[in-house]
Amino acid sequence: QLPILRIFYSGFQMVGLFFALSGFVLSTKPARLARTGDLASFTSSLSSSIFRRVWRLYLPVLPSTFLVMLAAYFGLLYKDLSNDEIAEWIPIVQGDLLRQIWDWMCFVFWSLMHLLSLRPFTAASNYGAHLYTIPWEMRDSMILYICAAGLLTLRNWPFYASIVGLMVYFYSFYMWDATLFVGGLAIARYAESATFFRVRDRSRTDVLAGGI
Image (cartoon, rainbow, N blue to C red):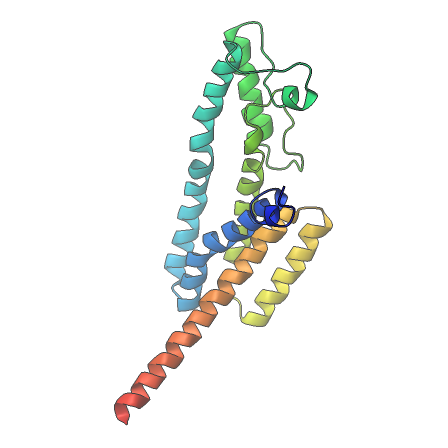
């Protein structure tokens, strides 16, 4: 249905767009502070962002997946055994509640918090099929903040050369998600630079107009 229009609202295309936008949004404030030369606020902002990013990503999903775990244990989730695609995304029902909680904890640790794995899920049970991007977002956010700390204070040509090199490096290891996040950092730097020059040129024009 709607084979062309679906590109704009469905599938991995929107996931990729979301990653690029995430990289841009997370980089906007550090890029602005680096441009103004306020290094104290720049480092403080990065430190605060790193700390808050963990809670912003995991605080909503932990209680929601815990409720899914309870629903699975008490038989409230639909499971069509004849449909392997549906059964794959339904948690495995354990024999008692403590084992079910342990199974959920394995999912949280080995899937949601397994930042070094290129696979979305590695645990036996899946308590949130739609959460497969959470570990990628967490890992890519940390990569982004490291790149921002090390590169945003550079001049334009070494900054963009480093960004291109990092994007090629990440993509060569099939880390397309990190490639898009770092690309968002480059867009944020360009947007802040363009805004700075537009404001500076406008201020010069106002001064000349006032003198005339």
